[in-house]
Amino acid sequence: MRHANRVAATAAVLVLIATACGSSSNKSSSTTTTPKVQQTIGKGEGAVSILAWPGYAENGSNDPKVNWVKPFETATGCKATVKYFGTSDEAFNLFKTGQYDVVSASGDATLRVVADGDAAAVNTKLLTNWNDIASFLKLKPWNSVGGVSYGVPHGWGANLLMYNENVVKPAPTSWGAVFDATSPYKGKVTGYDSPIYIADAALYLQKTKPALKITNPYALDDTQFTAVVDLMKQQRKIIGEYWSDYLKEQDAFTKGSLVLGTTWQVITNGVQADKSSPPVKAIIPAEGSTAWSDTWMLSTKSKHPNCAYEWMNWITKPDIQAQVAEYFGEAPANLKACSLTTNRDHCKLFGASDTSFYSKLAYWTTPTAKCLDGRTGVTCKNYADWTAAWDSIKG
Picture 1 (cartoon, rainbow, N blue to C red):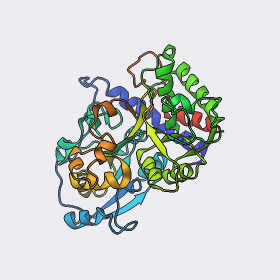
Picture 2: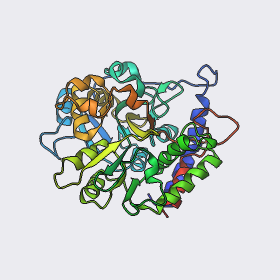
Picture 3: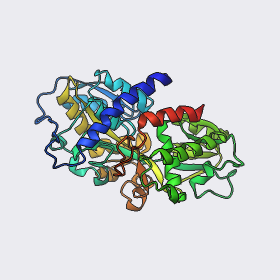
Picture 4: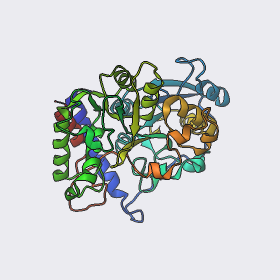
């Protein structure tokens, strides 16, 4: 979206988010209305429209050996059409059209989708794999409101710090390496190209500037937000380029034009697998890391709700989760998948069930005016504020 349109859209929906979060703050309140959910899965409508991150709904068109959509169609009779998106903002706007039954939304979009009235609450009793989904991913601030689930977790991953071992010395242990105004790697540092990347700077200041009293990197008041944005504007001077396409970041590290910055494990794997690439390593720094957790969400305008539930049940099956996790490069939400991956160390590599690993992570959550850290009497910056600040940071 163009800058003005994106800010206007997010500003409008954040008013609704504040209302949604406010009404759910007291589950026992008589004013809280429990949303209606589908009670049964009836006969399939014969079709389902899927909006997904690339790699989440493969039908063999990219690689004939990678196909879990066709078996789904055969098993259910639901003909699937798939539309891929490249960013959370793109997914948010496409889902608003009502043309798609389900979307694989990340935490920086989920609450926006709920607040805009585009996501339906789901009946977890109809989700056949619900009990096998990792508990640390279910009914969380980024995929539920007032104890009501607005989707089923799909997969997740940490935002790691990757560096070129030949160039970056000594090896970094802190996110301070990417915020150092005097960095010797100026022009070869990178960051994720999204307003949600502001949370990375907030997490760093949360751990290194206790006077700011940041307790949640997605809940920032005026003073805290100003400090975070100032840090990111300082960082902008050493950034070579921001990335959103993980293949482009992989290529840049392989060629050496980037040597330090935030990344995903799948990108690190790709760089390390390239024999022409310099050696790289990815870590969770001392301050911890932000992370993403994707959720399959059902449209309130779904024309094929029965097939949509069939899809959510299919894509969270252990065997399918194993295929998706390895192909995309993430930790599966269904931990039974871990015994079914081709690489038996896959889940270990991605920290799928490692408490010490995922406890260090702050999962993407849509910032709202109602402070997500529980503070009252103060207004926090919402996603529209983050979007406007991000545009000013990038210049």
